[in-house]
Amino acid sequence: MPMASSGKQPQQTSKNRAFSQSLGHAWDGLRALFHYERNFRKHLAVGSLAVIAGLILRLTLNEWLWLVLAIFLVLIAETLNTIVEAVVDLVVGQHYHDLAKRAKDVAAGGVLMAAIFAVIVGALVMLPAFMRWF
Ligand SMILES: Nc1ncnc2c1ncn2[C@@H]1O[C@H](COP(=O)(O)OP(=O)(O)OP(=O)(O)O)[C@@H](O)[C@H]1O
Image 1 (cartoon, protein in one colour):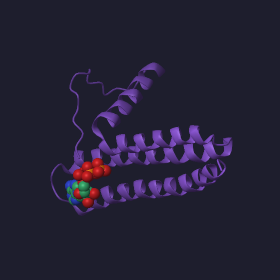
Image 2 (image 1 turned 90 degrees about the horizontal axis):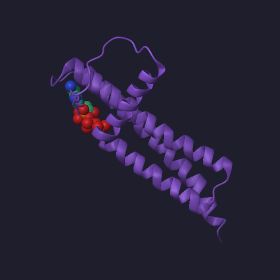
Image 3 (image 1 turned 180 degrees about the vertical axis):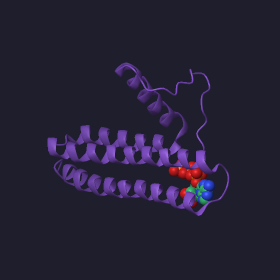
């Protein structure tokens, strides 16, 4: 899915000169992910629910570490997927190309792997924590 450009910001193509400038562009990137990527919003919502469940179930430090790792892996995989989609669309536009399909499908496969990892971690962390309640 092509990502629209806002068109409102100055069109900088030179290197960032200050750390605050780099940080500002990274923030723009996060806002773009949230604004344009439905799947990123879905993963963020599921991750937030997992954090709420973790607070209710009073996870241990080790359990939090695994859970946070799983959540961030999914979000980072979705970020890489978005980058691949944007670059592929930039290069081939609406033309069909086998390599474009391979790149997008492999990127989506990366998200799927991260999501499977998150489900496994979620089950291994939440089930024992749930059992501790009884
Ligand atoms: N230019 C292209 N050439 C060949 N196949 C393509 C091309 N663009 C997309 N595809 C195929 O269509 C699928 C969907 O592409 P699209 O860019 O719409 O991703 P998407 O559905 O927006 O992905 P996501 O749900 O992660 O946002 C790709 O996984 C790929 O198999």
